[in-house]
Length: 247
Image 1 (cartoon, one colour):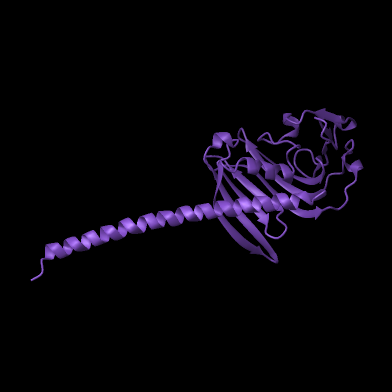
Image 2 (tube, rainbow, N blue to C red):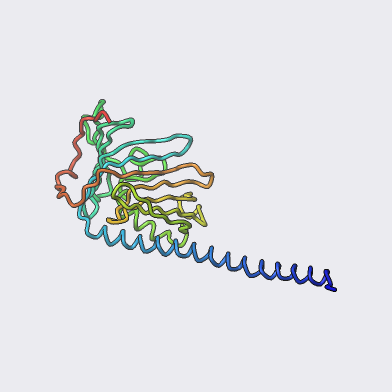
């Protein structure tokens, strides 16, 4: 005769032991996974930094989005950058199509409008003026890839990479990273971020930033990228407005 209670007790104890063993293993696997995502992202940041060292100038189409105060701002720019920090942004659409902003590392952003009475003048603003920043306060200086990379190095301890993946688009390999802030008040209210990076050139293809409520507060997409095309210094002199495009 078997003691059913004893057998049942052994089974329960066995199940409890299995559970106690299984869940720590599961937790360990989860922690290991998160750690590996972080390691992959950190390694990719270094590869982006190394790639940027070989870039003397670049141009691209920049589709930007920002939100704040119940408003949204969408603008497409022709974007030009030249070392050590010259920037030119030509608005293709938005409220002031054809307008141009130029930053020459002298503490001012110069603006030339395409139409209106002020188009006769070259306007000059401080870099943090609301006239030359998006709705999150991001201005022309600091908008380049090098600054983006450095900011993410600074926030490595606060913005944790919780997921990484590789996607294929045509012949391109795209790395996708998802970051989560453990202190949004220390990361300019950014609670989450998704980044898309070219897996071969390590150029930034785009990003989306979210606040704690899940709202998109800032986003950008880069296309038509031309590296080291030999941009002239004259391109970054006093801005001349361009004719607006029908884009």
